[in-house]
Length: 406
Image: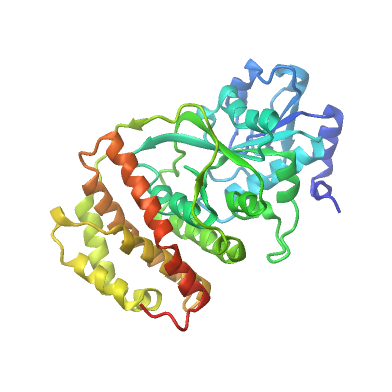
């Protein structure tokens, strides 16, 4: 049965009344008519554009928009950012269904704040699909030395090492899709029995052999709400990522090295000033407390050599506190392995990684305190190479967990 059959009847009727759309723009986080005001400027010259927004928002008069191409779909407005296991990914699925039903050539899902939206930015995410046959387009946001550190320390370099693509923000929540990828993501995964759109979209596209690219957007990385708990966010993100590693193991075990993806726009050194200091001492104290209180959980996930390296860090003066790249990468890989083996409750395991992550952040912040733009970019490149160089370690422990005891 086609995936669009699960759309509510009133949504199907809206799409049928509008007819074919060349481009569908999904706006899951939009709640008021004012949020849509930027779309009055049109865009996509010569193309039929459909805007899809959730029914939890205001009812907007279609007469205010060219062609009246508006579709409201009945889902609760999701929390911005990855604050829940289904929030943002559910928003992708709903918009992709509408795009498929409308027969569009391309689709953009914009999950960032309405204030950051513009037709120009959305066009940038869609043009590579329409004009150059890319199937998935990532944004490359403005870099900040101390911003998006979960992405910089884990998501981006891990994607690079395992899937062989150097994508700046593989966990981006604003994406452009081709109709080919829309159809692929709406299919049911044979292993999980869930639509592929509910999984890690970057790895789904790469593993399927679909061409991906990225475009430079002049906006900062979307951030969690002020009320969001970092530990919970880290747990959700890592849980999804580690489950993805297990699901796609046959692919990433064969992939070697990495390559840059085609990039559009200017990706020169654009490092914004930091607005708040990092509380390094508090982070290090949290790490030291974790070493004392989480020994049992860490002992399940981490081999002796890694624990020895962490013990040395607990005795290091703040001014000299540095976590070596190889140690950090092994920590990430070891937790991914422990997640796979289900030695302990997965949520408890992932929450126990929080003090280790803070230790890396403290080390990185101290190292980057007076760093230049080039220093900052070179630092991230070294970390990416460390993930690649340590991949054989992950492969060995993944394939022969009972025989590998470093």
